[in-house]
Image 1 (cartoon, one colour):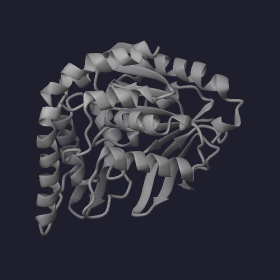
Image 2 (cartoon, helix red, strand yellow):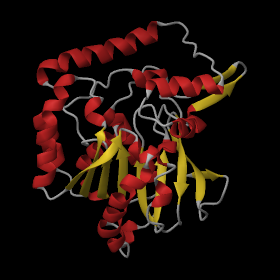
Image 3 (cartoon, helix red, strand yellow):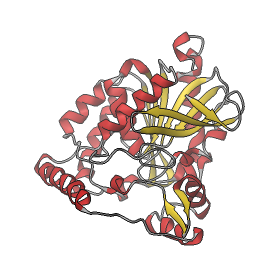
Image 4 (cartoon, helix red, strand yellow):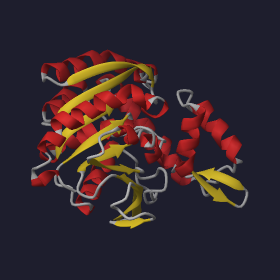
Amino acid sequence: MQASGPQLDRELSELSVPVPWGEIRGKVWGPDQGCPVLCLHGWADNCGSFNTLIPLLPKECRYVAVDLAGHGRSSHRPPGVFYSLLEYVADVLRVAGALKMRKFSIIGHSMGADIAGMFAALYPEMVDALVFLDSYGFLPTDPKEMYKVLRQGTDEIIQFEKKTEVKKRDYTHEEAAKRLLDANPTLSEQSAHILLERGLVQVEGGFVFSRDLRVNFKNIHRFTLEQSLEMQSRIQASVLVLLAQGGVERRFSEPAQKKFTPALLQNFRDRNHKVVTVPGDHHVHLNDPEVIAPFVTDILQTKVLSLSTKPDHKL
Protein backbone atom coordinates (compact mmCIF):
# COMPACT_ATOMS: atom_id res chain seq x y z
CA MET A 1 0.00 0.00 0.00
CA GLN A 2 1.12 3.52 -0.76
CA ALA A 3 -0.28 6.71 0.66
CA SER A 4 0.14 10.28 -0.43
CA GLY A 5 -0.78 13.52 1.26
CA PRO A 6 -1.25 13.34 5.06
CA GLN A 7 0.36 10.46 6.90
CA LEU A 8 -1.84 7.46 7.71
CA ASP A 9 -2.04 8.30 11.41
CA ARG A 10 -3.85 11.53 10.58
CA GLU A 11 -7.54 11.93 9.92
CA LEU A 12 -7.48 11.44 6.15
CA SER A 13 -5.04 10.02 3.62
CA GLU A 14 -5.03 8.93 -0.02
CA LEU A 15 -4.82 5.22 -0.75
CA SER A 16 -3.16 3.38 -3.63
CA VAL A 17 -3.12 -0.42 -3.86
CA PRO A 18 -1.20 -1.98 -6.79
CA VAL A 19 -3.16 -4.47 -8.92
CA PRO A 20 -2.03 -6.35 -12.05
CA TRP A 21 -3.52 -3.74 -14.42
CA GLY A 22 -2.68 -0.59 -12.44
CA GLU A 23 -3.94 0.59 -9.07
CA ILE A 24 -7.02 0.80 -6.91
CA ARG A 25 -7.26 4.23 -5.34
CA GLY A 26 -9.26 5.50 -2.42
CA LYS A 27 -9.23 7.38 0.87
CA VAL A 28 -8.60 6.33 4.45
CA TRP A 29 -10.03 7.91 7.59
CA GLY A 30 -9.14 7.13 11.20
CA PRO A 31 -6.36 5.79 13.43
CA ASP A 32 -3.79 3.24 12.25
CA GLN A 33 -4.93 0.64 14.75
CA GLY A 34 -8.66 1.27 14.36
CA CYS A 35 -11.06 -1.53 13.56
CA PRO A 36 -11.03 -1.73 9.75
CA VAL A 37 -14.21 -0.92 7.83
CA LEU A 38 -14.17 -1.23 4.04
CA CYS A 39 -16.56 1.14 2.22
CA LEU A 40 -17.79 0.21 -1.28
CA HIS A 41 -19.67 2.75 -3.38
CA GLY A 42 -22.45 2.19 -5.89
CA TRP A 43 -22.43 1.94 -9.66
CA ALA A 44 -20.92 4.98 -11.45
CA ASP A 45 -20.11 6.70 -8.12
CA ASN A 46 -16.75 6.80 -6.32
CA CYS A 47 -15.41 6.74 -2.78
CA GLY A 48 -16.54 10.34 -2.28
CA SER A 49 -19.93 8.71 -1.74
CA PHE A 50 -18.91 8.27 1.93
CA ASN A 51 -17.49 11.77 2.51
CA THR A 52 -20.44 12.98 4.56
CA LEU A 53 -21.26 9.73 6.41
CA ILE A 54 -17.87 8.65 7.75
CA PRO A 55 -17.31 11.77 9.94
CA LEU A 56 -20.53 10.84 11.81
CA LEU A 57 -19.41 7.26 12.58
CA PRO A 58 -17.31 5.93 15.51
CA LYS A 59 -13.84 7.47 15.61
CA GLU A 60 -12.32 4.20 16.83
CA CYS A 61 -12.70 2.63 13.39
CA ARG A 62 -10.45 2.97 10.38
CA TYR A 63 -12.52 3.51 7.22
CA VAL A 64 -11.04 2.42 3.90
CA ALA A 65 -13.18 3.78 1.07
CA VAL A 66 -12.07 2.64 -2.38
CA ASP A 67 -12.78 3.76 -5.92
CA LEU A 68 -13.87 0.50 -7.50
CA ALA A 69 -12.03 -0.47 -10.70
CA GLY A 70 -13.14 1.71 -13.59
CA HIS A 71 -14.46 4.40 -11.22
CA GLY A 72 -13.03 7.55 -9.67
CA ARG A 73 -9.23 7.58 -9.73
CA SER A 74 -8.78 3.81 -9.96
CA SER A 75 -7.37 2.21 -13.11
CA HIS A 76 -9.69 0.88 -15.79
CA ARG A 77 -9.66 -2.85 -16.40
CA PRO A 78 -7.60 -4.05 -19.38
CA PRO A 79 -9.16 -4.21 -22.86
CA GLY A 80 -11.40 -7.22 -23.43
CA VAL A 81 -12.32 -7.59 -19.74
CA PHE A 82 -15.85 -7.41 -18.33
CA TYR A 83 -16.93 -5.45 -15.27
CA SER A 84 -18.96 -7.81 -13.14
CA LEU A 85 -19.64 -8.83 -9.58
CA LEU A 86 -17.07 -11.60 -9.19
CA GLU A 87 -14.27 -9.44 -10.58
CA TYR A 88 -15.08 -6.83 -7.94
CA VAL A 89 -15.13 -9.52 -5.23
CA ALA A 90 -11.59 -10.45 -6.28
CA ASP A 91 -10.61 -6.77 -6.00
CA VAL A 92 -11.85 -6.69 -2.39
CA LEU A 93 -9.62 -9.66 -1.67
CA ARG A 94 -6.69 -7.84 -3.30
CA VAL A 95 -7.24 -4.73 -1.19
CA ALA A 96 -7.67 -6.74 2.01
CA GLY A 97 -4.46 -8.63 1.29
CA ALA A 98 -2.48 -5.48 0.53
CA LEU A 99 -3.67 -3.85 3.75
CA LYS A 100 -3.26 -7.07 5.78
CA MET A 101 -6.89 -6.95 6.88
CA ARG A 102 -7.65 -10.43 8.16
CA LYS A 103 -11.12 -9.53 9.42
CA PHE A 104 -13.09 -6.38 8.77
CA SER A 105 -16.54 -4.89 8.32
CA ILE A 106 -18.03 -3.66 5.06
CA ILE A 107 -20.39 -0.78 4.36
CA GLY A 108 -21.73 -1.06 0.82
CA HIS A 109 -24.09 1.17 -1.13
CA SER A 110 -26.16 -0.26 -4.00
CA MET A 111 -23.74 -2.18 -6.27
CA GLY A 112 -21.15 -1.95 -3.51
CA ALA A 113 -23.55 -3.82 -1.22
CA ASP A 114 -23.99 -6.56 -3.83
CA ILE A 115 -20.20 -6.92 -3.90
CA ALA A 116 -20.12 -6.95 -0.10
CA GLY A 117 -22.83 -9.61 0.13
CA MET A 118 -21.08 -11.91 -2.32
CA PHE A 119 -17.71 -11.40 -0.64
CA ALA A 120 -19.16 -12.18 2.79
CA ALA A 121 -20.78 -15.33 1.42
CA LEU A 122 -17.56 -16.57 -0.21
CA TYR A 123 -15.23 -15.46 2.60
CA PRO A 124 -17.45 -15.50 5.71
CA GLU A 125 -14.50 -15.84 8.08
CA MET A 126 -13.17 -12.43 6.99
CA VAL A 127 -16.27 -10.29 7.69
CA ASP A 128 -17.74 -9.46 11.08
CA ALA A 129 -20.39 -6.86 10.16
CA LEU A 130 -22.18 -5.87 6.97
CA VAL A 131 -24.17 -2.72 6.24
CA PHE A 132 -26.22 -2.68 3.05
CA LEU A 133 -27.19 0.89 2.11
CA ASP A 134 -30.37 0.90 0.01
CA SER A 135 -29.63 -2.58 -1.27
CA TYR A 136 -30.56 -6.18 -0.47
CA GLY A 137 -27.03 -7.48 -0.85
CA PHE A 138 -28.26 -9.85 -3.54
CA LEU A 139 -30.53 -9.10 -6.48
CA PRO A 140 -31.78 -12.24 -8.25
CA THR A 141 -32.65 -12.50 -11.91
CA ASP A 142 -35.70 -14.36 -13.19
CA PRO A 143 -34.39 -17.60 -14.75
CA LYS A 144 -36.69 -17.03 -17.74
CA GLU A 145 -34.98 -13.69 -18.38
CA MET A 146 -31.44 -14.85 -17.66
CA TYR A 147 -30.51 -15.56 -21.28
CA LYS A 148 -31.58 -12.06 -22.37
CA VAL A 149 -29.41 -10.39 -19.74
CA LEU A 150 -26.39 -12.56 -20.48
CA ARG A 151 -26.69 -12.03 -24.21
CA GLN A 152 -27.16 -8.28 -23.87
CA GLY A 153 -24.07 -7.91 -21.68
CA THR A 154 -21.97 -10.04 -24.01
CA ASP A 155 -23.16 -8.19 -27.12
CA GLU A 156 -22.46 -4.79 -25.55
CA ILE A 157 -18.82 -5.54 -24.79
CA ILE A 158 -18.18 -7.11 -28.21
CA GLN A 159 -19.77 -4.17 -30.03
CA PHE A 160 -17.71 -1.77 -27.93
CA GLU A 161 -14.51 -3.58 -28.88
CA LYS A 162 -15.34 -3.21 -32.57
CA LYS A 163 -15.22 0.58 -32.34
CA THR A 164 -11.85 1.80 -33.57
CA GLU A 165 -11.92 4.85 -31.33
CA VAL A 166 -14.09 5.86 -28.41
CA LYS A 167 -13.80 9.56 -27.59
CA LYS A 168 -15.17 10.87 -24.34
CA ARG A 169 -17.08 14.13 -24.52
CA ASP A 170 -15.53 17.25 -22.99
CA TYR A 171 -17.60 19.29 -20.52
CA THR A 172 -17.23 22.43 -18.51
CA HIS A 173 -17.46 21.72 -14.79
CA GLU A 174 -20.99 23.17 -14.73
CA GLU A 175 -22.07 21.02 -17.69
CA ALA A 176 -20.66 17.92 -16.03
CA ALA A 177 -22.54 18.68 -12.82
CA LYS A 178 -25.78 19.16 -14.77
CA ARG A 179 -25.30 15.88 -16.63
CA LEU A 180 -24.64 14.01 -13.39
CA LEU A 181 -27.72 15.51 -11.74
CA ASP A 182 -29.89 14.78 -14.77
CA ALA A 183 -28.76 11.13 -14.75
CA ASN A 184 -29.07 10.81 -10.95
CA PRO A 185 -32.11 12.75 -9.74
CA THR A 186 -31.62 11.36 -6.22
CA LEU A 187 -28.40 13.37 -5.80
CA SER A 188 -28.44 16.79 -4.17
CA GLU A 189 -26.39 19.49 -5.89
CA GLN A 190 -23.84 19.35 -3.07
CA SER A 191 -23.58 15.56 -3.38
CA ALA A 192 -23.02 15.82 -7.12
CA HIS A 193 -20.10 18.17 -6.60
CA ILE A 194 -18.62 15.81 -4.00
CA LEU A 195 -18.70 12.92 -6.49
CA LEU A 196 -17.24 15.09 -9.24
CA GLU A 197 -14.10 15.72 -7.16
CA ARG A 198 -12.95 12.21 -8.13
CA GLY A 199 -15.31 11.67 -11.03
CA LEU A 200 -13.75 14.16 -13.46
CA VAL A 201 -10.39 14.43 -15.18
CA GLN A 202 -9.23 17.77 -16.57
CA VAL A 203 -8.21 17.72 -20.24
CA GLU A 204 -7.29 20.42 -22.74
CA GLY A 205 -10.90 21.05 -23.74
CA GLY A 206 -12.38 21.02 -20.24
CA PHE A 207 -13.29 17.92 -18.23
CA VAL A 208 -14.18 14.31 -19.01
CA PHE A 209 -15.79 11.76 -16.70
CA SER A 210 -13.13 9.48 -15.28
CA ARG A 211 -15.14 6.26 -15.19
CA ASP A 212 -14.69 3.57 -17.81
CA LEU A 213 -17.55 3.52 -20.31
CA ARG A 214 -17.67 -0.25 -19.98
CA VAL A 215 -19.13 -0.02 -16.48
CA ASN A 216 -22.40 0.92 -18.20
CA PHE A 217 -22.79 -2.53 -19.73
CA LYS A 218 -24.97 -5.27 -18.29
CA ASN A 219 -23.41 -7.31 -15.51
CA ILE A 220 -23.22 -10.84 -16.94
CA HIS A 221 -22.77 -12.64 -13.62
CA ARG A 222 -26.32 -13.36 -12.42
CA PHE A 223 -27.97 -15.56 -9.82
CA THR A 224 -31.45 -16.99 -9.33
CA LEU A 225 -33.47 -16.48 -6.14
CA GLU A 226 -32.59 -19.98 -4.95
CA GLN A 227 -28.87 -19.34 -5.47
CA SER A 228 -29.11 -15.93 -3.79
CA LEU A 229 -30.81 -17.37 -0.70
CA GLU A 230 -28.16 -20.09 -0.49
CA MET A 231 -25.42 -17.44 -0.69
CA GLN A 232 -27.23 -15.40 1.96
CA SER A 233 -27.19 -18.39 4.29
CA ARG A 234 -23.38 -18.56 4.05
CA ILE A 235 -22.92 -15.14 5.63
CA GLN A 236 -21.69 -15.34 9.22
CA ALA A 237 -21.45 -11.58 9.80
CA SER A 238 -24.09 -9.47 11.53
CA VAL A 239 -26.11 -7.70 8.84
CA LEU A 240 -27.90 -4.35 8.80
CA VAL A 241 -30.11 -3.65 5.79
CA LEU A 242 -30.94 0.07 5.51
CA LEU A 243 -33.55 0.79 2.86
CA ALA A 244 -34.69 4.24 1.75
CA GLN A 245 -38.42 4.84 1.30
CA GLY A 246 -37.85 6.42 -2.10
CA GLY A 247 -34.88 4.26 -2.93
CA VAL A 248 -33.78 1.11 -4.68
CA GLU A 249 -37.18 -0.39 -5.53
CA ARG A 250 -37.81 2.56 -7.85
CA ARG A 251 -34.54 1.92 -9.67
CA PHE A 252 -34.83 -1.72 -10.69
CA SER A 253 -33.62 -2.15 -14.26
CA GLU A 254 -35.55 -5.41 -14.55
CA PRO A 255 -39.21 -5.21 -13.37
CA ALA A 256 -39.29 -8.86 -12.30
CA GLN A 257 -36.65 -8.20 -9.64
CA LYS A 258 -39.14 -6.57 -7.29
CA LYS A 259 -40.97 -9.85 -6.73
CA PHE A 260 -37.86 -11.40 -5.14
CA THR A 261 -37.25 -8.77 -2.46
CA PRO A 262 -39.74 -10.04 0.16
CA ALA A 263 -38.01 -13.44 0.24
CA LEU A 264 -34.58 -11.82 0.59
CA LEU A 265 -35.68 -9.58 3.45
CA GLN A 266 -37.53 -12.37 5.24
CA ASN A 267 -34.44 -14.55 5.04
CA PHE A 268 -32.42 -11.80 6.71
CA ARG A 269 -35.03 -11.43 9.46
CA ASP A 270 -35.22 -15.18 10.00
CA ARG A 271 -31.48 -15.12 10.70
CA ASN A 272 -31.89 -12.32 13.27
CA HIS A 273 -30.44 -9.64 11.04
CA LYS A 274 -31.84 -6.11 11.17
CA VAL A 275 -33.87 -4.51 8.38
CA VAL A 276 -34.69 -0.80 8.70
CA THR A 277 -36.49 1.60 6.37
CA VAL A 278 -35.63 5.29 6.61
CA PRO A 279 -36.96 8.41 4.91
CA GLY A 280 -34.94 9.48 1.91
CA ASP A 281 -33.89 8.32 -1.52
CA HIS A 282 -31.22 6.14 -3.07
CA HIS A 283 -28.36 8.44 -2.03
CA VAL A 284 -29.65 9.17 1.47
CA HIS A 285 -26.25 8.19 2.95
CA LEU A 286 -24.62 11.03 1.00
CA ASN A 287 -27.43 13.60 0.93
CA ASP A 288 -28.67 13.17 4.52
CA PRO A 289 -26.14 11.02 6.38
CA GLU A 290 -27.49 11.98 9.80
CA VAL A 291 -30.59 9.88 9.01
CA ILE A 292 -28.67 6.61 8.83
CA ALA A 293 -25.56 7.31 10.93
CA PRO A 294 -27.15 6.19 14.25
CA PHE A 295 -28.02 2.77 12.81
CA VAL A 296 -24.57 2.26 11.31
CA THR A 297 -22.95 3.45 14.52
CA ASP A 298 -24.98 0.99 16.56
CA ILE A 299 -23.92 -2.09 14.58
CA LEU A 300 -20.27 -0.99 14.58
CA GLN A 301 -20.30 -0.40 18.33
CA THR A 302 -22.16 -3.56 19.29
CA LYS A 303 -20.80 -6.03 16.72
CA VAL A 304 -17.32 -4.70 15.98
CA LEU A 305 -15.86 -2.40 18.61
CA SER A 306 -16.88 -4.80 21.40
CA LEU A 307 -14.54 -7.33 19.72
CA SER A 308 -11.73 -4.85 19.08
CA THR A 309 -9.39 -6.44 21.63
CA LYS A 310 -9.00 -9.44 19.33
CA PRO A 311 -5.91 -9.29 17.07
CA ASP A 312 -7.88 -10.12 13.91
CA HIS A 313 -9.73 -6.84 14.22
CA LYS A 314 -6.68 -4.66 13.73
CA LEU A 315 -5.54 -3.17 10.44
